[in-house]
Every structure is written in C-alpha cells, then in structure tokens.
Image (cartoon, rainbow, N blue to C red):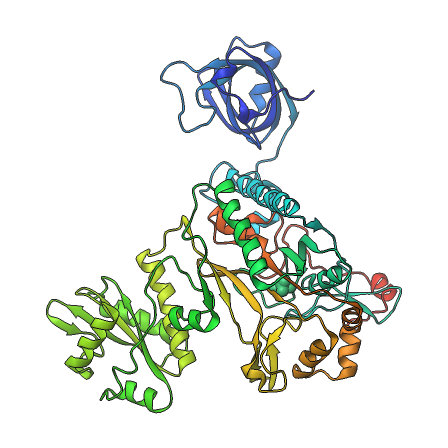
Length: 583
Ligand code: ASP
C-alpha cells in the first residue's frame, strides 16, 4: 500500500495516528538540522518534519530531495507546538514527524513554480507543460469543480427520467452556423465525415425513436475563427424532450440551475427566482443586446420624443432619417475628465457610433459635449425620465435603432467594469424568448436561421420571412449566453419549407437532411430541447474569465496545442492512404 491517507485529509483529530502518505514535495525548508517538507496531493498539503534524530537512511534520502520529487513518507501525526500553527492551511494545526522517507521518483527543475499564482509564465508555456500547470491548486480545484457540476447534472437529469445516450463523433455536417471539421474516409476515398457541431439532428431522431428524454455531455466541434475565448472543440450539456412545450423545457432548466448553484458553489447567489423572461425585442431595447447582464440597472432609455424638435444637428439628423435618440446614465461620472470621456467616445465608435454626446449634471449646471445644444426644457425632461441626479453623466447615442442599441449596450458593459457595478458573486440568470426566425445576411444576400433550421417557426410561413418568429429560447447569465434551444419542427412539410427559405432546393435538402426528413414522416412526437456550453458555466462558477482554465487540455486562443504540437503535418503515406494530395 502506497498510502494510508491523503495529505489533505488529516486533522488534529488524527493526532498520534501512524500514517503513510505519498505525494509531491511542494516546498522544502532547512531550519538548522530540522527539515520541513510540504507534501502535496490532490487533496491538499501537509507539513512533514524530519528531525535530525531520524534514521541515517531517512536523512540521506531527504538530503537530496528537491521540489516536486515524489515521496512516500511514514510517520506520526503530531499537534504543532503552540504558536507554530498555520491557520492558512487546512492541515495547519498538525505536522507529520517522519520516521521514514522513501524517494519514489525525482524531478527535473520545473519550467515554472506550481506552488502559487505568481510568476507564472505565458499561457503557451503553461499549456506546453499542462500536466504541471494542472498541479497548481487553483487548476486542480477547477477540474474538481467541473466534475461536481457534471455529476450534479447527471444525477439531476437521471432523477427527472432522462437517459444519457452517446451519439457519433464521425457524422455528417450539422448546421449550427459554423464551418465543419472534416475527416477524410480511407474506405471511401474522396468522401468525408464531418465532426458534429452539436448532436442536434441525432437527438431529434432519438425522440422519433421514442426515447422521450435524452441528455448527453456532448463534445461539439466548430471550425470558427477563434475570437475571444472560443475553443475548436467544446462540451455541451445537451438535452431533448418529447411531448413538451417551451415552458416545460424552461422550467426543467431553471430547476436544474437553481439547485446546482447553491449545492456546488454556495458562495454564489442567484439574483432572482423565478428568472426574468424577456422577449428578444425587449432585451435589445432595454439592454442593447440579446445577452443582457441584469446584475445592474443602467438601462437604455428612449428619449426620441423629448428631442423631436431638437436643434442639435446630431439628434435632428438621426430622427429625420428614421433613427432614434437613446441614453444611459453613468452614476457619479459627471466629473469625468476629458480623457475619460474621449476614451468612451472611442469605444462608442468601435461599436459603430459616429460620436458620443454627453451631458454632465453638476452643481454648477449642465456640462458635457451636448450641453450647449440642448434646451433647458429638454434637459429637464431627460433628467426626469432617466432619474439622473447631480453627479451623473448622461451618454447619448443618436443613429439608426440597431446602431444606438449596440453602442449603448457596449458602453453599458464598459461602465459596468469601470465602476464595478456588477457583484461577481451574484448570478443573474434570465431567459430571452420570441426571437426572429431569420435574419438577413446582407453579404450573402440570403436569409440565415437565427438559431438553426430545425427550430419551429410561428407566423405565416408563406409571408415575409423577416416577420416570422421562432419558438427558440436563450439562457443568459451575467451578460453571457449560456445556451439555447427551441421547440422543433416535427413535420417534413414545415421542415422542407424552412430549408427552402434558407435557399435550399429539394435536391440539396434531400442530400443534406434526407435522413431527418424521412424520420419526420414516421410519427415524430412534439419535441424540444436545449444545450449549454458546459465550459462557460463551469468557468463562471469557478470565477475565471477563461474557459481554458476549466478544460484539462485546451487549445491556445489560436487553436493549437503546444504540448503535443497538434495540428501537425502527416506523412506522404498516410495522405496517400486517404487519397489526399496537398495543394
Ligand atoms: N443544438 C443547439 C446548439 O448547439 C441547441 C439546441 O437547439 O438544443 O446550440
């Protein structure tokens, strides 16, 4: 037996117990003959004390020991002498007085310290030595948290009658709006499997098969430009249900998270229960986005009517060309310096604004770039509708509706971070519903499905596609889209119609989705489901910005794996076997 206990589990109640532990040397200190070794395993760290009167063999072994060597230590649990306790360590009341120390393995000097969060190298180096990076306590904790979240989800869904079913990784293109990863087939030269962007069609088929309630911790592959925090492969909690309406799916998910958060991360609080539900339109109008962060106010307020007769050119021209004027109020920012206002203006421009009009409500009256263009009755009306008080800064956007919402929605988040308006320990879940079914893709001159083409539409299918709504829903939290789903189409006629609006003729639809269209002819139940990015949920629960921190072996932000060197070239022979030639 290598060990009787884990390093992190011993406490003062174990005093006088003889134990054998195994782990890594976290730290080593020499105090005039007494050697202190902090021994670490996944469960924690404990101090091992090697006294000068230990056996000659033990002293010899310990003499060479360096950081991160692997040791087996036998000894007795002792209370630390009074005053020597370390309240920062869970095991800080005790130490192990070593009787024997065996070296199980040595270690080269590590490329970076694993014993803290300081002096970390760049992320590439951390990923190159990911097996060392994961030794760090924070990273270990993240993986344990991830496990707990997944276990909770599995248990919860099991109790609700769901069964976990695996679906293939080698499959056919599944349109979720991204590029597919392709895998060449050796047995069918010139033909390819596609890695699933999600199990969407397969889970629908499972409902046709009568499985009633399916879930999967599913790996999804999307060959997207890796902006922000995306990964080429990521994990979803994917589920699908038969004989359900939208509210059945929403209620289930709401219950799942409402129980998950206090169980796994008790220090996090849900902002509200039941969760608010906003229509897509309402969300965009109030928060400037369909992923609202509802932990704080600063809502977008339409002041177009107040400025209907404005003499301010910027407002006038926006209103005359069918646009609008909206504003947000930044609390306590009236004294912002020129430089700070300029920085906000620059940000507004990156969101599409031509400029930024501001009004500072100060003790000496109104200031700001718009002050001299706004009439007193207009500013009074703005103050009254927004509730702006002395000390506040009002930011205006005047443009077409979409631009105004985007600009103020973007500034709202910048101010959130600048002014610390959102409590990081509060989780504000919300549903966004009633999405448009399609959005027009100007570049390609065609309609795109806002969710995916299997989402059930509402409205006149033969009318203007722009007017169709979908039975889709998104779950958002703290300004992030955690997941989305919909009630699905369950007849071949409607499915074909949707594909047709998306620009597919019958042959193309048959070629890509023939199997699904066929299945819908054999008695598909009413069905709906949802999927969440698991990585994102765990990252938010772990309090980290990067999903890479909660994935054991992630790719870099540019899609590479510095540890294995993937992606990497392959030999001629392999290419020949696959019937491929590089251009
Ligand atoms: N397959 C969808 C997605 O990956 C989720 C769903 O509609 O259930 O976003």
